[in-house]
Image (cartoon, rainbow, N blue to C red; front, side, top):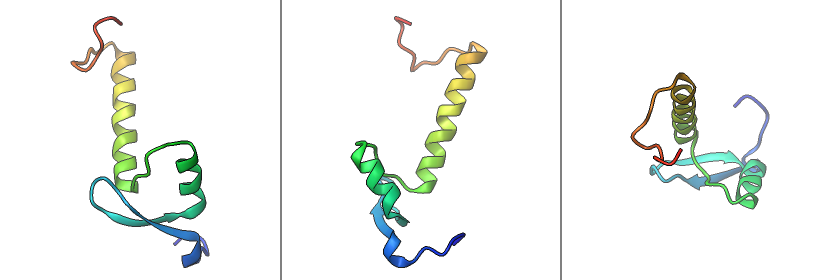
Length: 71
């Protein structure tokens, strides 16, 4: 660990990908209060990467099959 976080400050979560990981309890409480999905770091990084790729494609003028034809 990068800090001196003890086991009481961590919370086990079950990600939709099937991983069980320990994450910071305070961060998870904030995510839950905002009604956001709780995900492991692997899924989070994959989601962010996909969102960045979509934004790059959007600004580069590349059309996507997932686009809504109204826009």
